[in-house]
Image (tube, rainbow, N blue to C red):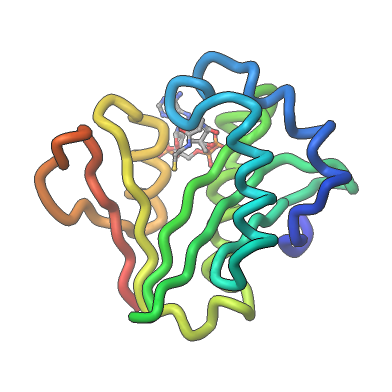
Length: 145
Ligand SMILES: CC(C)(COP(=O)(O)OP(=O)(O)OC[C@H]1O[C@@H](n2cnc3c(N)ncnc32)[C@H](O)[C@@H]1OP(=O)(O)O)[C@@H](O)C(=O)NCCC(=O)NCCS
């Protein structure tokens, strides 16, 4: 896996089918999730759509938002055909090392109740759950550095 690249319009046809997968749809939503990530990143300099690729093909998409307090939230989706091979682990390590995010001192992600893949992924990377679930059933996992 190479460095993360900025998401662009040209990636959308390749990543759109990931959002037809029922697991992706359950936890993130349908094809408009990818389109919104691109639109939000274009409209807001604190918002970043990032692509991880292997041999030139996109394998993961990250949506990262950096806040004024030097924290950043993120969500990630991996190509459903390539899950449970360590791709998300490597993509999130690349996110943590991404030069643009050097000033970020706290990363966090909301994990919905029942999303065991996400919870295990984050725990393995050293993230810890912060509090009881919100009314929407989310638990924030955070990594302070
Ligand atoms: C969550 C997701 C990003 C994980 O991607 P991935 O590339 O499969 O993750 P990795 O291969 O790096 O695996 C990381 C850990 O998760 C575990 N894992 C992966 N899929 C799992 C599953 N379906 N059930 C339980 N654990 C799972 C792996 O075993 C590994 O844990 P371990 O090494 O301690 O056993 C991927 O499943 C996905 O895109 N899901 C849909 C979108 C989503 O839920 N995003 C999270 C919201 S932030």
